[in-house]
Length: 117
Image 1 (cartoon, rainbow, N blue to C red):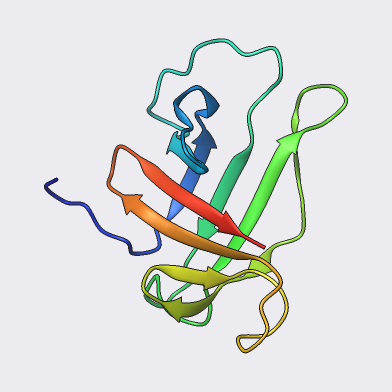
Image 2 (image 1 turned 135 degrees about the vertical axis):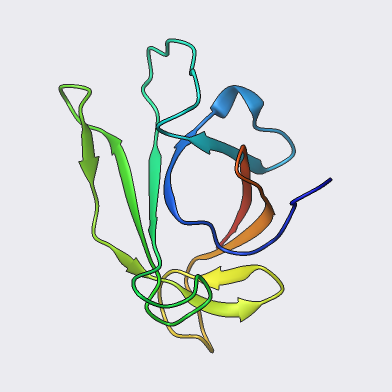
């Protein structure tokens, strides 16, 4: 696929759970994708690469989930540590990560990731 990469994306991505399959979560750009209505709300991932490259040590991920009034509530920002091969540690240390995400596909239209624990 043209433009496909396993690199860390930037910006805001909203969970398009209707498209999830085989343990892969699908996210679409928050500002430009027309999501269908959802009663359960949608998670949002906010990637901030700071002033460095997306693979730099300054990259963070903030997860937002619907709160009691359905407005998104942000959790604490997690430092993203690159592990190689499109994998990033979210917690713990680089040698012993607690949570790991793998970027399966990242294009301007779609972000697919797999979570490891």
